[in-house]
Length: 419
Image (tube, rainbow, N blue to C red; front, side, top):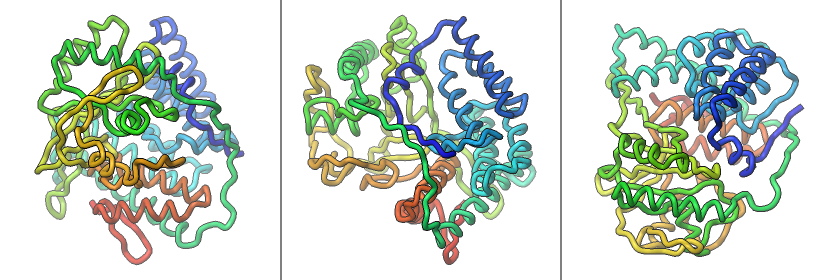
């Protein structure tokens, strides 16, 4: 049985709201029991129990539970969320236990097995890089083996994907879809969140502006887009200071809390054998959760060689540098790029015409990809899901885009990681 569940704003808001310590302890115990029942390794269940008890941990643990329903002994396949990074916030001990579990798992197919193994090996390396911001993997480094295993498993997964793409099934795998109904975005919450964000930024004295879909709504509709899930805002890299933001969030007394802080851990081959992993000094994305449960994605914008880019450990979007002007967002006044047509054309092409489906990973004209292990595993999983759903053309577009960006290379009809 295959199930595919659409995102629900109400569910996301419920999950994102802060919980008291007794509730978090209850979540932890439920996570422990649930994961053990699903066949998870003991170290993974223990790790998840501890994570669920932390203020920002329950959403990741819920995703792990969904993943184990998909990958474990339960006769249900849930493809909606199986492409998230299973190594996220997972300890090295739990990662290594899960590696053994995956190698012995007889239920999953070869693509799933190897792409998830690549996730776990990459996650072990990234966490080590987090400690110092840079990691040089020479032949003598103890983690060099993990990097080699990451590349090997990624290439096996890409080989399986290439083979299936060359002879796609004529009958796509069916999925039971539960569609969301009505508007997914509560605009009253969004107005309050923007007003509270303005107050916090005013206290910090940082210039800020709306970007991406939030800016598109301000220009095209003078309001939030009805199908949105979050608020997209930006600050400039030189202005941003994580410690000051953390202090301001604490001073908000529950109006805001930080859900996650994302650094880009770049992977760069140095020569035929050595590999360098490194991070920028500051994070690239901070996810803030408002007291209503609404998420504000705070993108730290980096200017390099005349290009102003923002993104995540997976994507980046390049824009020309811009000055700011005022715009109306419902009854709130915000700032955005002064040349709205130029900015939105860079991001969306024909931005004046609403579209029913827009894939942020391949449709934006200004899309680029972060040179990280997370980018290649995530995007390969998304391509595979499209292939399973019978959309071979979309899967092909993903792989071609990654090849054009230099992330993948192709030997005949087979793609491989260009690391």
